[in-house]
Length: 387
Ligand SMILES: NC(=O)C1=CN([C@@H]2O[C@H](COP(=O)(O)OP(=O)(O)OC[C@H]3O[C@@H](n4cnc5c(N)ncnc54)[C@H](OP(=O)(O)O)[C@@H]3O)[C@@H](O)[C@H]2O)C=CC1
Ligand SMILES: CC(=O)[C@@H](O)[C@H](O)COP(=O)(O)O
Ligand SMILES: [Mn+2]
Image (cartoon, rainbow, N blue to C red; front, top):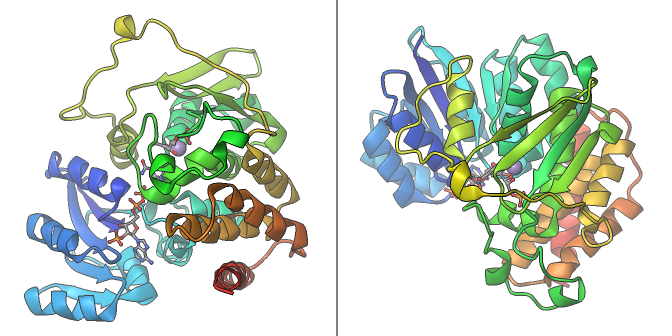
């Protein structure tokens, strides 16, 4: 059956690649709603091509400008707009699929509301699972909602698992490219520029996740994301440095058999699979992986001393409660300061460490607890940086 796609973060890296999948499969998918942030020229391009029923943007003045251009489209803005984009009720009988491709914990509330509505999810926005995995997984189970992973490693794990029971898993093995500074020592990280940090060796992505790759926080967030998605304890989630980003992750089963998923570093592969599942369909304009040209693949241990953010993530995940909210919120705030050239690259991990050290954990936090801790931490870091 045809699917309504509710796209949160349509103007970003994942959003635009999702639109490319829709573009080549118009008989399968229709863009039902679009939520964007501040990129209004891109929003206009998307509206002109895909004619969604509902559009939301971050700022009220942008929504007004768009409403004047498109009087027939329902529009809103801000958090309320994002929620509407996730819960809009189209007047058709298609299946509903919400693609969460916004960056940061702003994705949390709309995701919760979409689940309560019974809409299935394709999740790229890992921050939502990191900050509130227990709430999301519990609600999804209660409302019988399917969660498909878009993150490349989690899509790989999903494909390797192929429906196997979590009791049959020995270890999840998540691969990491190492990011832009993988060949530098910690001393060589002093004074690195934003431009250098944004130069990822294998993937073209949004700026926040590219910095997370360079600090290895991305892999830490992915460990927590995998814990919630696949119900595997942290001691059975391993990470490995794999420079080529060809093996997207692996699962070792109890009989020691290892399954791996390979492919070119092209996010349209996991995005399309999340949209088409349980079917697998041809990916238009895709380049096959040439294993004969590839020759060899490399795997190396990851060192917690070199990449302390990875250790902070494991420790936060093990502690649980609001600790992962603090990890995520402090990282979001610190990365934003770094991108705005207010702090140095190595300050990111110092800020995260200090917040984790001083936090009094709330066990089994509610959505309100999480939202309060998230805003408090972000506000504190922002205020301190401007003193
Ligand atoms: N890029 C990738 O290859 C991968 C990304 N992910 C995850 O997917 C998510 C998106 O990443 P990516 O696409 O790279 O990020 P981008 O920065 O490229 O895009 C972010 C999107 O979110 C929108 N946005 C930001 N803030 C708000 C807000 N307050 N309200 C509404 N919309 C907002 C932006 O709008 P605008 O630009 O209009 O301001 C944009 O559409 C992240 O969680 C990331 O970790 C996971 C795996 C791979
Ligand atoms: C494409 C994708 O899923 C990213 O999360 C990617 O994994 C980033 O690469 P590294 O974090 O491995 O550098
Ligand atoms: Mn990933």
